[in-house]
Image 1 (cartoon, one colour):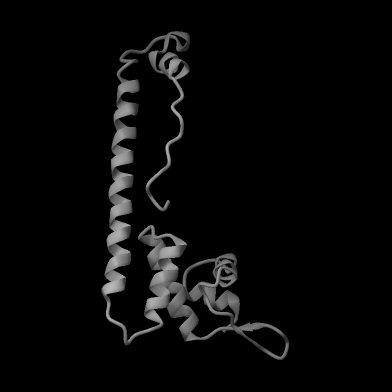
Image 2: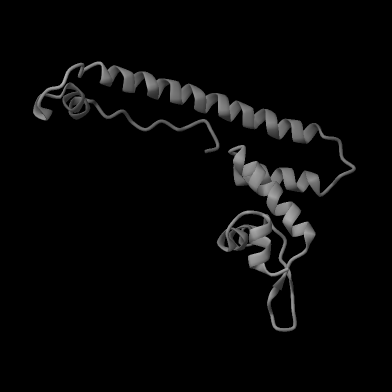
Length: 142
């Protein structure tokens, strides 16, 4: 199948296919005598796997590790569990960060409880007066 057919079968764009090829997540396709890429069922399967991992918010490095493990079917799945345990830890950290963000936003929202002129808006005044905190190193893979 050609690249457009692969993209359609995997429900993605041609650009996505090319990107994953460039990143080495999708193996290069064979070429026809006219130099068109020729993809097979294994490309569809792998591309769907990649897309499903992305739907789980996995990083390219995590996907790369899972694909490397999938390419060695005789190995035990302990390393797969390790990848997932690390990903779950990243998700937990992101949830904590989002909870802190929600609290900060809620605090700002409390500063403007009634309709008034924008120049008296407590939210806008509070944002303007906030001290910029140094950006901390995020502990997630995102």
